[in-house]
Image (cartoon, rainbow over all chains, first blue to last red; front, side):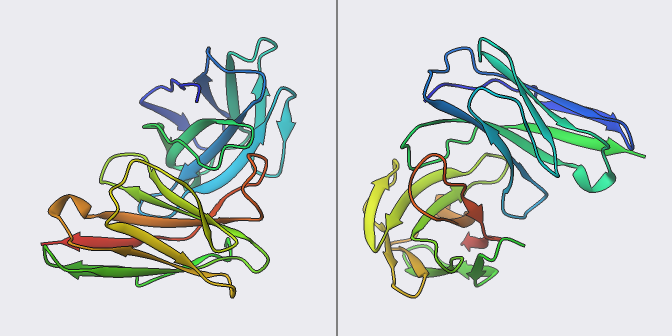
Length: 110
Length: 114
């Protein structure tokens, strides 16, 4: 699986957009980018995924660069409840598992 | 709410004992995956079951075993517990085992081995 690189931590202000970067420079054409988050001591929560097109749902937007070597998860209006560890995962087509890294600890401050 | 439940919430065992953790998947989901999450680390894949058969396994010893039942419930069994088995154990259900099938996680079982 392609390896991902994320910042260890980041802060953002409540009400502002949070932009979470992820580098996956070795990604292959059939690998999907997934984002999950984990609020303290709970199970990971699915956020969004994409292959090459930008995606948006009720939680977030996923922007994937044209060369697919990096992506950004955007939380449009961060709230205190968005404080969590965010995981960017690259998943091969037909791969049965999710390979989690260390993720980015995001702290939303009032 | 993902519709995935796990029991018990917390469990304390001593070294050498055996433990069974339980998971109830979303109705209609044919696949269940189990993960181990040590403190301060990301979840690590243990194994996956698809329609009651093991479909893939991570780098875990044979004393970690599982079962999946037709009623969308499943078990993770760990024999000969070691101190390093202390972790949050997560199950995740998905419709099938393809990469486009989103895995939905339960709240986890916190296992402490003394």
